[in-house]
Length: 100
Image (cartoon, helix red, strand yellow):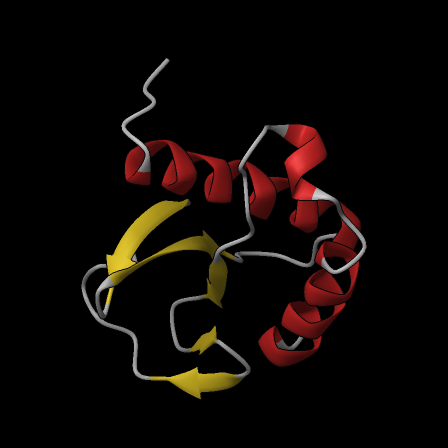
């Protein structure tokens, strides 16, 4: 059985190796959260999940855009990293009024 905190730190490790600006000029990583039916892990700690944690997307959480992913099954951290980057990019688009 996977643990959200372990998965979070594995994804964070992969994210730290990525040059986001090479993916898209001005793109910077956002904070992210992993959650399931029972728990939510955000910014290095377990937090109380609220109704905004729904689906896989980017949301405004406490005044900042973050990427979120509902982890329903064990998934490779590198695959999850790619999915988190995708959601981070949606947050980047929203913050910069870039909708394509």
